[in-house]
Amino acid sequence: MRVRSATLAALTAVLVMTAIVPAVAQESHSLRRVFRAGETDRYRLTMNLERGEVKLDLTLQMTETTREVRNDGSIVIEMTMDSGSMLLNGTEVPIPNVGQKVTFSVDKDGKPIKGEQPIDSESPLATVMALARSSSLPDRPIRVGETVRVEVPIEGSRDRKLAAQFTLVGIERRSEEVPVDTLRVRSVIEGLVPTPDGDQNLKIEATSLYEPGTGKVVRVEGVVSGFRLVQLGPEPARLSFKRLRLPAERPAPR
Image 1 (cartoon, rainbow, N blue to C red):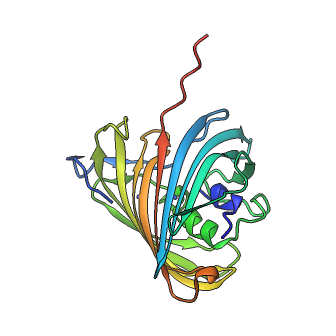
Image 2: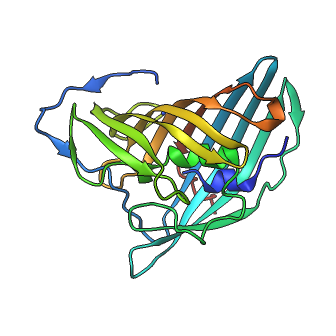
Image 3: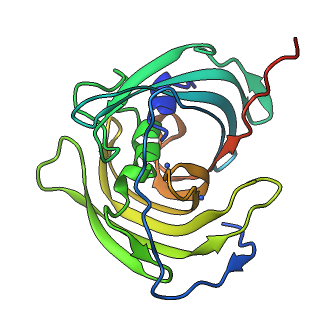
């Protein structure tokens, strides 16, 4: 089984409840992503896939850099896979592309720009992870406790859309794992998704922690149901994932 570099590029997208700070119902917050040229963040992505007797555990550590913010508001992002490990039924499997850099572009709303994505961006895993990206979020501020329902267009399909709903649960205070106050959002995205392995009826349930002011996803955990890989047979697999922003690396002492 081969891990494609495009899976990393598509990352951009979540359940254990911790202390939520009560907030006034009228209070509203923007989840809009604000990009700044030169900013760099490090992330660790873990994915666990199970189907029957097959179990796949994948861990990747990545660096994401905003290379350019263009005059039209579009953004050029570079993603590097710094390290990775994969276990297939407990046996370690080599991961190619460690150290490889992938560059892609998104528009001012964080949506992928057609023709400026990695060549492998239509792989099944990339398709799934792209649906969890913040580009699907509502483009207006939402109130604490409010649920917003939107339709998410599917790239390459004129009339097919996914049903999505987002609930701003509240403000979550900093913790050891997430050392900043964040906005906690619960989301459900579902619908028929075209992939190279055929149409798949997917449902993504996730909980994300967003950094106020920047809209950066500090942590996202989720589960995907209805996901299929032809390498594993026709039955759906259970796929869970977690993406966590890591602390900035400290400069080496002189």
